[in-house]
Length: 236
Image (tube, rainbow, N blue to C red):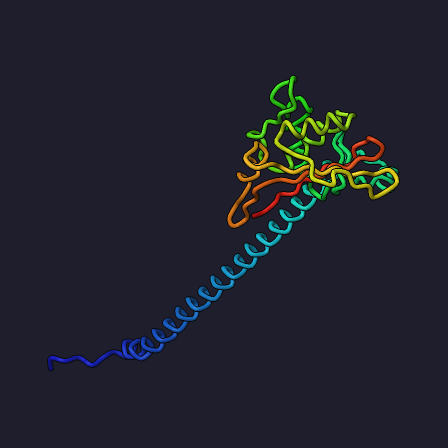
């Protein structure tokens, strides 16, 4: 007497509710899974775009660097004033002002141009005008020394004065002093004596296991015209 029978409408709703709940749950799971897939695809697309952007940036940077180096090389090499006749007859490959050398100027001659600007005249290479004593302590490399010796020798036209200049800097002539190897060209060789300014400078140029103890300088002329100055570090 105290219980009432369920109404028909309530039974229908009771039967429909579990099914609707399952459908709703499946729809939600599918929606979440779809959103996750979309997010992963979006992130992957962003990663590809980011990677492609970095690749394009790197390629552009490399291209600009190569063009800059090429332009710098062309500019520095334009300082070379050597003529075709000097190349063929004298063997000179580099001429910049009074600096001449058998050595090629190179692809990127930054060190050479720096040394030439650091020592613009022979006067800048010596202690005072009354002597030819070089500023040994100021030379940072053999290229500095080569530039200064070339400037000094090119300004002296008497062989005896050249010998005196080398003697003032601790060099002595190495016999045979003159070696003729052509109709016009002749070579003079000088070497540092021990405990002199040039040998002490040579000793300071050592690094790691390479320890020079002296220097040998070869000067090449053609009819009293300087062609080349070469410096050889003598190793222990």
